[in-house]
Length: 264
Image (cartoon, rainbow, N blue to C red; front, top):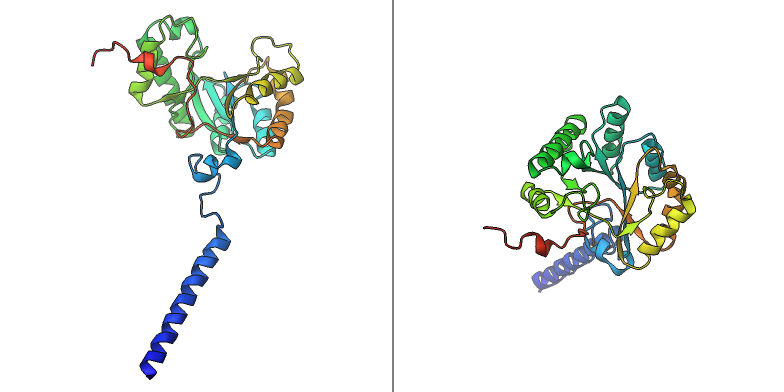
């Protein structure tokens, strides 16, 4: 009889301990999911509450505005993506490092940004990109694998872009175009307010937006409007993220056509 009573008490204690452990875990992490910063492919990022995503991207930097852009992003606790070119100044080298150290995505645009040179052949294209990748690695100890074509994959300078896309794929790199446009490099005189209106018009018609902006000396209005843009996006419930390997790619040229009639 005593054994039965002792056994019952032990079972009750074990059950209570198990309940406490589960309850305690729920208090620590009530949803039982990864934090937002751990991986955008996690449950939180895919939750309907966070389904509206915006990726702010800056092409052609570093420039004399890069540090100001980084200051604004830091102040507003936002991470972005910088598609950079090759610049050899000591200031640019520090900016590459700062991009990485502050948790942004350092991505490739081209070393020279010379369209005629880059798109003269696939060999020249590959040489330019490999030079940029190695240069950035030497400075930051990060080897970028995310890329954006100068002019986008729909540019007319390359002629047939398909061989270049196939090259990117063979390297195991990921390329990203955009589906939201500020127009800051089309007309440098456009006001910050108008640039933001252009972006928001595109962003509001879709759940996931990759926004094209530029980090150039001439695009000062982009910088002027950046903080207001971020606050507007946050106020409307958008999650602002850096591009990673988990980000859904936006391509202007359909991937289904790239590998048609290619010898296997």
